[in-house]
Length: 504
Image (tube, rainbow, N blue to C red; front, side, top):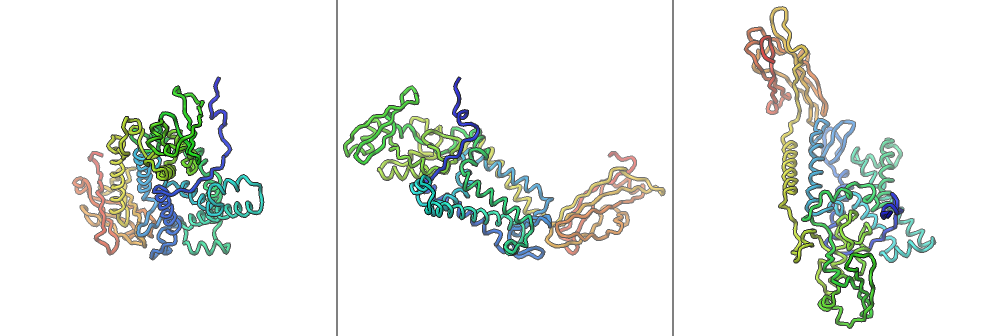
């Protein structure tokens, strides 16, 4: 009975520290640009001023006591939960759409875990040095140097984690006042608890666990293969070009190389042979003439990988498609004068073709077009819903138990419940009137005018009383709700009137 590798390792493998090497290239520049932009938005947005009459002058404020979200000039209330549903739907479809086109690009560039881990690695690099220095520091016994550098690294990690947690809390209250109250011990207990929880979780996720969050915690890496197609662009190693017929070759200082060749039958065993080459055999043409692949087996693609995989082993679920191995490989190819693209974004279909073409995004597929259409339609509907939302919502429900009442003088009475929600930024008074029935038929009790605070709702009980002749001729009428002094914002609701002899 054979035991699989996962059975041998158990359900959880002790983390092996990964010391990444810094690299330069277009994908590294793009990752850095996304990180700077994301941090600027997250950390600076609570401090952006925005003039308000009834709330702190903060551009983005999640006002939980007031049951509203203030986002620049937009006020979102719990009644606008449809917007949240649309946002979640759009986010899911966008994730599927992007994955179908370019694989796990979200994980590699935009995921919170990636952004914070990248920043923590940068801190580690600035204090402890480049990869060889960090490896040496990790292996050496504890001494003054190790205590200072490792302790300083963790101290800055905790500081960054703390500011991350405090910034999160700042979205829920006035940021300058929060910092003052927090330092002086006057902040609410919830502020300290929330900041502490986020500080610890950020420190553990970005500083201690890192790639294990992607491997063991995040489910996306596990089900990504369901959304991959042969045309999906992902980071691939061109094995046909890199291995040649004899395998990879390590170029040594003495113009010697070590060639690794896998047996044709696919066995795991490898044959190694040493050969002494002349100076000219570093040229690409001579390597290919001898059947040696373009890969010089430098290992740089593994050293820059934040999850510690070897992309030359094929597409793996741990790969987050960050493209750093592409930058590393292109740097080595440039140094030897070899063509770029040994490791590149490409599709399995293109790599498997006899003559691979230049990689490109293939979007003309039924699934991708469907995702794109759903994304456009839902985004357009969300924008339309936000743009056309009025300053108040109204709903009129007929009380149907009983459906109508015949009074002693023969008049017919229907009752209605009117709900008005004020979505304006200040208190508003509303006037309720009717059209299509006599003016005296509408009875609102003592509520001829209804004053409602911002973000609140009010229920008004109304009744309509009509003589039998008028009731028989009235199928429906209109209830008009008008903000006082703002007749242009009046809204109407068609209401049914029931009487004996009418079909329900």
